[in-house]
Length: 221
Image 1 (tube, rainbow, N blue to C red):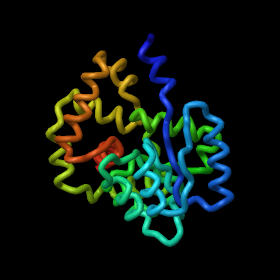
Image 2 (tube, one colour):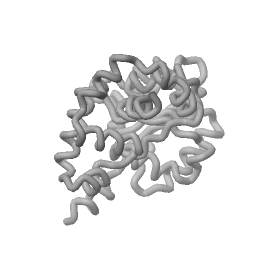
Image 3 (cartoon, one colour):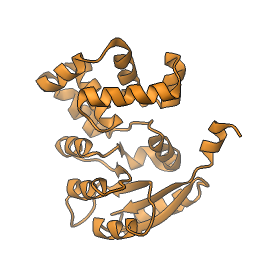
Image 4 (cartoon, rainbow, N blue to C red):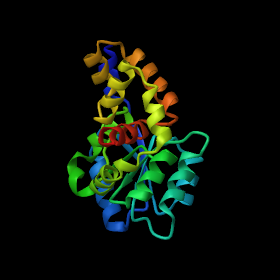
């Protein structure tokens, strides 16, 4: 069997946290239409989500940025710091300082509900595979605005990357998947995965969004 075809059939087990009844119901209806997505739960807070995760395998959690009665960063961090953490994606606009905290807490992506719409299932699949780094407009603009105050440690860390690692980091910042990077760089996907790991180690980050943040800062520094 073709490995690429086999990958397409893998089910994305996910949950939605914090959406109000109407939005949550709409999201669920949209997501269940995708054959490759299994919505395991729709809950209102992190405590309920942690209870679900204690009995269910969950690959990705979509968290509403407007979650009521909870601190968004603490909610995401509580999910990320579990023994078997899911991919955590935030849906909605958040202030840049909050977005930055979320990124370095391990949040994988930010999605704008008005721009994603019916493409949400595909966007989530791309995020699961390590591509489609999607920052909200507010976060992106604020990131561009603060380039002049780029942290010295991040600059020195970026300077340790060799030419091939910088090319890969730029590709990651553009939201390219490992498969796309492998084709463009004439490498195997296994080699690309190793390079991504090396880049994370040199930059002192834990995921691809954090690579994208540093690369974006370097572009405008």
